[in-house]
Every structure is written in C-alpha cells, then in structure tokens.
Image (cartoon, rainbow, N blue to C red):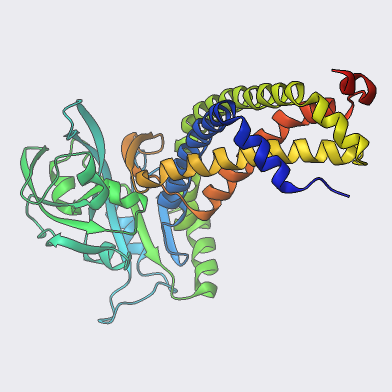
Length: 385
C-alpha cells in the first residue's frame, strides 16, 4: 500500500515559505544550466550545421585553418580541371579560389573594436553555398569596394546597408545583408576576392572550395589531391572542417559547467535542509503512518517523491524564466580564425530535457538522506512526542 500523492502535495502547501525558497534556488540553478546548454546548442548549430557533404576545402599542406593558409592561382587552375569536379549549368567547374583575412569593426554598444572575418569569394563561391540568400540590399559588385554582411553581425556591429568600413587603402561600403540559417558564416563579411587580395596587407589567396559531382567522385578527388606532391594541399570535408571549430566554445563549457556544478551543490543542500525540517516537524505524523501499516520503504518513497516534485517545480520555473531569451545573441573569439563569431541562444527540446533532468536530480539528491532519516524513525519514541 502506497502513501497517496495528495499527502505530499498537502505537505508542500503547508510549508509554503520554505518550499518556495527551495524551488527558487533550484530554478536559479536551472537558469544557469539552460543558459549554458542553450549557448552550446547555438554554438554547435553555427558550426556543425555548416557545409555541404560534397564540398572539399583545400588548404596549404600541413595547415588546418584558412587564416594561416596560402594557395596559388596556378594550383587552383590544376585543381579545377581535375575529373570529378561538379559543373554549373554553363559547364563551368564549381570551384572557388578564396581569401580569408580580418577586418577591425566597432561594436554597436560602443565597448570597443574587434576582429571580424572578411572572406573574399567570387560567383562560384556563392553558388557553392546555395543556402545563402540576400535578405536586404544586394550582392557586391566585382572590382568594387563593396561588402555584404552576415545577418548575425548586425546584432553586435554597425554593419547595416550603407555602413562604411575601412580596409586596405580606403573605405568599403556595406551593400547587402545575407542569411545562412544561423551558421558561422553569418559572422563574416564577404567581398570580391580579387579586390581584397589587391588591397590586403597579406596579398595571397587562402583556400579553395570545390564540389565533387557525386560521392564516388568525392573519394577519388580527395585521394588525388592529397597525394599530388606538386599541389602541396591538405583536403578537408567542409562539414568536418567546421565541426572541428566547436572547440571555440571550450571556455564557455568549462566556466559554465563549473558555475553550474557549484550552484547545483548549493541547491541540493537547500533541498536537503527543507526536507530535514519537514521530517523533524512531521515526526509524530510519520510514526502514525507506520502504525497505520505503511512500511519504511513507503515512507522513504513518499519523502523522496516530495523532494523530486520540488525539483521539478524549480526546473519548470527556471525554464519558463529563460524562454523570453530564446534567440539572444552573443559572441566569442574563434581560436581558428582569431576573430569574433556571433551565435544564438537555442532553447531546444534537448536543452529542456537536460534542464529538467538536472532539476529532478537535484531534488532527488537533496531528498534521499532526509527520506532515509524519515523511514528510520522509531515509532514508539515519536508517538510519545
């Protein structure tokens, strides 16, 4: 015979003050957990969701980042003539010679300047990323000092259509804003690759992006390019290259989880304190339950369930408090590109499940010792109190 669940609800309602404080403590911890896991979910989306499985990124041999790499026009001409490269509708190879550098941009809130990735592409480079679309203004004109900005940049920097940015030997005009489904490329500025190389302090191309015609051609291209000593190129699957950059969020993971663990320990102690007080207050009542035939296991389960309910309520409150911040944007330094990247807080179903599980765990850990104490009460002694 189990103790009715209504018994637990009644006891929680009779201790409104202490119960509310415990729920609030767990809710604050859950807010931190949702913030942390939501930021990591946004970071993962920015990187992992980027890239096409048929695209290959080619860098200088031995290097693993576009910022440090340099490639030549001559090797690009060789690569784009290889068999297995996909063709456009007008029979042109889908291959792009690109340059990646940095540009100093002032933050919108006036907190200072920072480095933002500037990518030089051509028409083929845009075609190789079909998910990218202009949502405001237009694409840059080749040979002109014009740029287009990723949508995410607008939330943190003054890069609206018509904005002026200084690079190389003069001012450049932002003529458009593009969207790429919240991926890392929305943290970049794009312009004509030849124009950037002609004005850059580092006048060389950084990488090549090519698309294979199919999966079979992909494997052949990777082997041929990687083993050709004349080219001197390293080959990366485009999605794999971006997935490796998730390491940019390591500092967020470490600091966030450290703070969350400390707060979770405090919440467990708060829950334990609340339940110990409940056990002390209800000692005669517990003895009566034993006399009525409820076993020690029934009492342990009842008190543990009560603590878990408190944890669940705290978890739900913490999640509700964070929902208005869905889509909140922030930035971090990308250690691969040495520039700031912008990403969003993503409160996904996975984030909600992690937060609820953490709240339940806090409630259970806080309640297990008091519940055990309640189950071990001496019936005769408590009835005399």
